[in-house]
Image 1 (cartoon, rainbow, N blue to C red):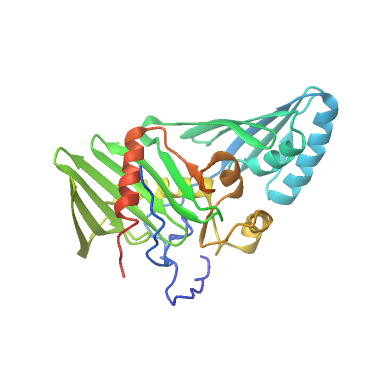
Image 2: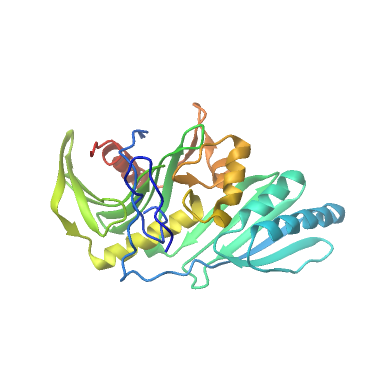
Length: 325
């Protein structure tokens, strides 16, 4: 387990070891997170992803691109990779803890005439996806997931990269949604139950296995309460929330209290772009390629499912703006 980081405010960071922290958007924060020991009953899930990356173009450019990518892979990746090339096409096979975009995106910006295609999948077949990279930009991306576990995410970041809010959620039952919300300094699991009379939003305190607060929302009326005693999250729901949060964190986030070897490249990139390092941060390549720039100079990623987007807005409107301490 990682050491407990010091916090200038005298309070610790709350997170699980796995999570590593553990429409209208508001940037108001409610205070720092604290480290929370991982729930012993929650099994560690393998995050290994198998990816096949192909690059097509003229022979001379492919040779130069290969040299550049291999330099970057040797620096950035701990695991081995296989090369299956011919004169007209490069092909890489990589197995690792995440989709290996950075090295290929960086090299693509130096060879804009080449097209880079990425296909990846989890060994268990729970999810797969594809992406196309051109001129250093993520031109196309799609994820295919089991219908029972399909999730969407929405993010907002300030001009300096500070994560205003990130929400990942999925429908669990007909009128029940579960998800995970995170800002630069705080996070929580949440559940929304919808009915003809309105909605009930429940949220944890950090990554704790208990519901800590509740909002009953009916039209313009909102009744908020801190739960005392707190209510344990059902074990099955807790496991689903844990997987949802960690899948999102593994793909989109990096954390300032991570090991130096794990964060060195992201810190270097943040410094090069003049971005601010916070407790929780959006991965640089996601910030620069997958998120669009807003009119105010920030960054945004929107959900395509309007109902999921409404859930994200509900969480931002109530959870993010509720003063706690």
